[in-house]
Image 1 (cartoon, rainbow, N blue to C red):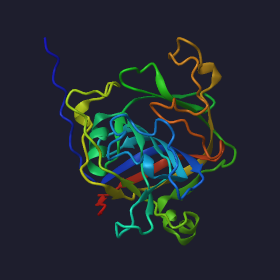
Image 2: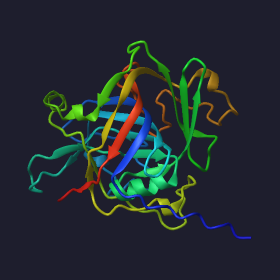
Image 3: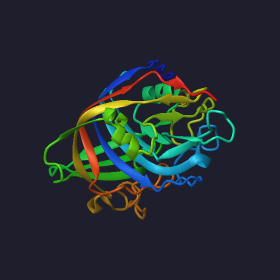
Image 4: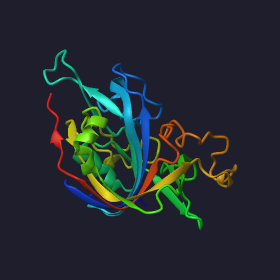
Length: 298
């Protein structure tokens, strides 16, 4: 008896409004006018070597790893893990030898639903793939997260732990509109807080990418898009740690012997070092907006 056909993926056009909670992990690599190497695992095999791959244009600077649990969105609740390594160069407006511009880009991102995968790729050129998320919260308030491919849910490629910090006993308001202030622009050396996402390739029919992906969710985006998301919420400091030692153990998840100090395994997600173990944020009451993107000319 043939397996039933998978349910069609709904199309949910921009703009999107989302709510939930998230964890913000700042990254920093010294900026270089000459391109520098990206960490291993910064791109999925589908995007690696395609027009989506900006490896030859990476220049460092401030970046971020985000973990988000969306309670509501245009495609329903879902979890998310992404990395924005820093700044990537783009040709000057004249297309010739003028000074390049620099912008942020998401290079690796996982979400927990196929609806988020397909629509994120189509609407904004965000290179989403699906993964299995396992959140655990202890009685002490520590949150642990393991992320795995659908084809191997017991073997995570990313693991991390968050615990409350005493640095901010009370929550403080944050919002991305602060990034548009004069002071913020000076600190960012004039670079805009926007994402510029290059075109994405589509998976071939039936190709699960070796990780259990649903091929019809891995759709293409035909043009480079620029989008400036908005976000607001209430933030408190959290301490970021390697996965607790008591969670280790051969046979528990098949990961014995791996180096988890860099959180990712270097293949499914890159190794990275946070800017400061205590300089990370847990944002509650998160409200995000993803507007209709603009097409990048040239």
